[in-house]
Length: 111
Image 1 (cartoon, rainbow, N blue to C red):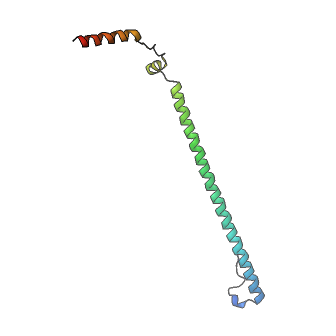
Image 2 (cartoon, rainbow, N blue to C red):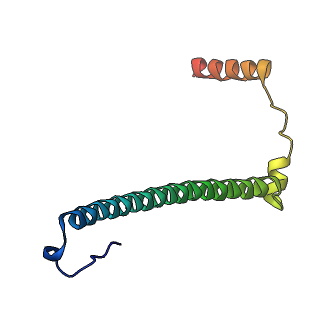
Image 3 (cartoon, helix red, strand yellow):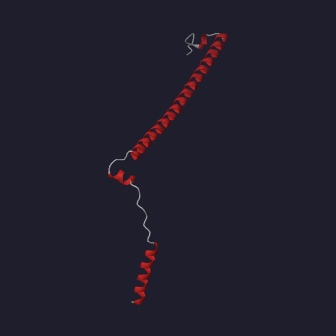
């Protein structure tokens, strides 16, 4: 930061006042530039933190998914046996069902 050469500006010559103003302007420029750079670095750090959070969230979700898939594959006990059992043959009654239905209809008509 810039410091004045003397306590009062009144004692300076015109050239000294101009030099002081030039030095002050340069100090202000540097201060503004450093604050702008700090803001830029801060915003980049925040963006990186957000990206890291998203990456971590995706990793946690994938880990949960793998855990659930592992449970699904490695089931043990009666439920696993029941789930892995082959389905039984489908029983169809084709002609027999028609004969039974015809007998029932005949009983209804005769009654």
